[in-house]
Length: 153
Image 1 (cartoon, rainbow, N blue to C red):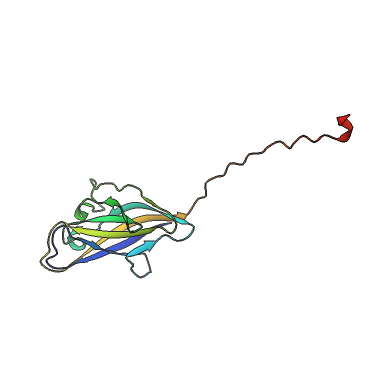
Image 2: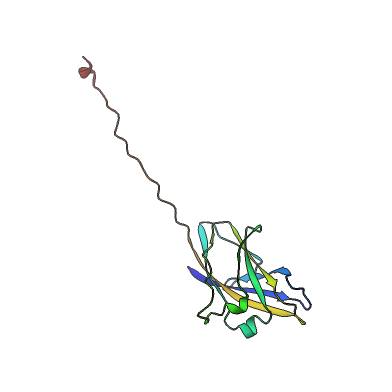
């Protein structure tokens, strides 16, 4: 099932360039979280990262980092203001796969220092589907040869 997470980060005034901070992830009709855990029996695939209106949603130049299981940076985006959904030259986002119980978190890295507090908003489109079980090959063996006592003599 496709869904769109709303990702938000508040960047405080005078935050230095290159500063990394956590963002919140909010799925439809749920409270925002800093870490999203893929439910049991599901897998999550990233489909797209975009902004709708860079002037209002990304008032400061920054990029996003997707983090897997709180330890591995799996994607660093181009500057978010270049990821406008209507931009035909918008960079494509590779498909990342998160298995059941794996954690997804998003950080934001500043590329300029704001003079006032700024809130950044962007969207992460994902497909969260039931995990498919790989087909298990079954091998059928012929039944063992059974000899009757009459054939032994």
